Length: 136
Image 1 (cartoon, rainbow, N blue to C red):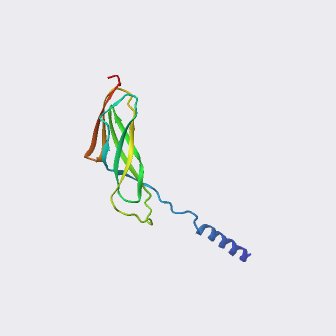
Image 2 (cartoon, rainbow, N blue to C red):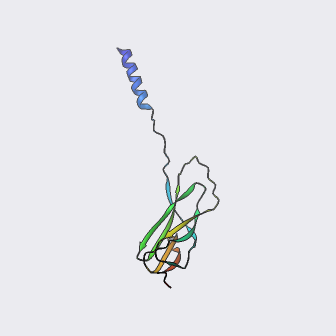
Image 3 (cartoon, helix red, strand yellow):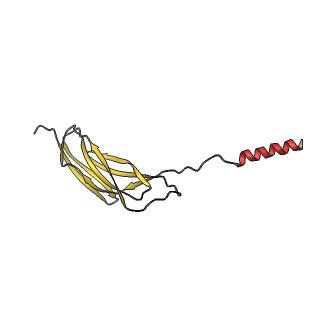
């Protein structure tokens, strides 16, 4: 009986002492600085307008996550976000790098649109695009 109790205790200790969980690396989201925007000065209603956006990458361990857009009337604020896996075992180069992406906009009304591309809390790159109905 004692022998069975010892074996049972040993099995219980073994079952609960080892964890099968693996350490997972949670991605970190970072705000990037937009450093250059190539945009047209005018466009036509209901036609896609493409703006070329150049942004900074803080290291070789980050990748582009996407653009975020906030709208207030005809004024848009665009921010670029990066994602890092934050793996402490990963070796990353720290050289300054740049990435490129397209920001597209399809106007549905005639008017003047302002786009503020985030650089830092006090600065942005501002582009103004005048949209016409295309009849002139």
